[in-house]
Image 1 (tube, rainbow, N blue to C red):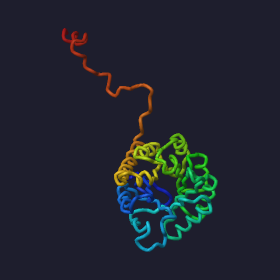
Image 2: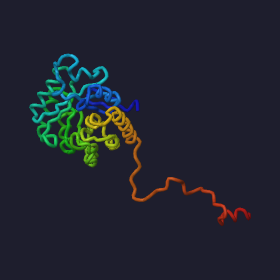
Image 3: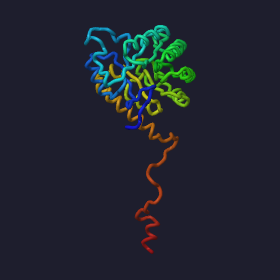
Image 4: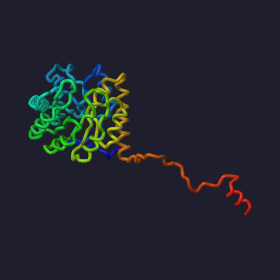
Length: 271
């Protein structure tokens, strides 16, 4: 799909798969998985990036910045103030003007705090950040976030790291109907079929981490996710057939030659 590109703010991507860099057993596993995924944009938790660490010891030393666009994220922040400060730190360190905004409201579920998320998004947009905002699948909140100027809305498919897939496709569809910016499903993916389902709904992309990093074979799973993302996007563009209650024959029922021994065949032979 060479002409099927995704634009987020000032950035253009061919791959619609966004992949995280956390939880891998080794940095070598991470590098190989990123390569297999085909991603062009990787998320980096600012809190674990070890900014200023000696060369070779930081996470960023293992990411080819000529190949990947960095998407710093504010993972682990539970207040708007903390998230804003973390985003500023990432920009000052030269990581990116993109930021994946996360403001969590509960340590057990890791669900976003809607009020603090909105407050932080509004402030960061005013400061010139291109904000991709992690949020719930609430269409009303998504519209409010769009109104303040975020570059993309990222509803959770299910709780972070849960592997439950897309629990509420109806809300995702409603979000898509009203969206004026890209909608990227973020969190909850467990396997390749979850990515395909999300893409078939019409979302602009999928962001995931644990489903690859925690797999028995991260590189194979990353490749599966790449293929699923492409397949789901192609299926969406192709347009699925409508669901029906009863069967519809796929073989033609007209224009068939009469069977030997039938009344029509006997009549044809006699004439």
